[in-house]
Length: 248
Image (cartoon, rainbow, N blue to C red; front, side, top):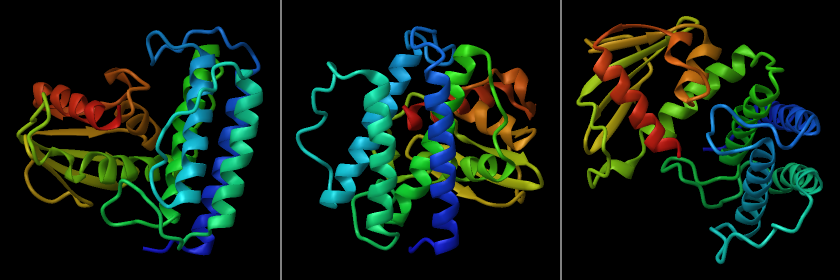
């Protein structure tokens, strides 16, 4: 799969804007606690994202997972490191282009284009983290929120990682997500998760709301009260826990 030039440009702009906002809010104070990540501070988020960016710079350079990893960066100033890393990942993506072969965790896309999308959406989620820490949350663009839902259900959730039954939350049911006229029907059991972009077929539970609300709930950045639901509440709880397993 090769990402179009237009879509690549969209993701680069998203990455630049979201990472800039993350850094801006980080400078409001590194010690603030992050409510959605118990035990983490804003500094924890800033360092984490910097390391994620630098890891993907190496993935793009090598075409494979770097080993050993991570380097010891604990003595670096968090914001200085972050600024370097956010510049480096944009440069690395631009130099790689979209069609370069590289390692990814998506069975259907082993090109650098995968990381354009993943790094943009990674930045959205963690921008929200630091904004929540300082109570200055700004909206997520509709297109980004819908794209984020789509990416989370596949490949993050519906990948081949469940074949050995390595889950504590089998779900054993179908769940439908609906936002802004789009639907995703997710069927899960102990050894598989499949997704169809449709509203067809029976489900045990439905989750719906604005694209931003559904996206943030899926990523554990909001409470269940932020979305609306119908159907089996136990299935909804198990589904959210299965998503958490897939995104840790």
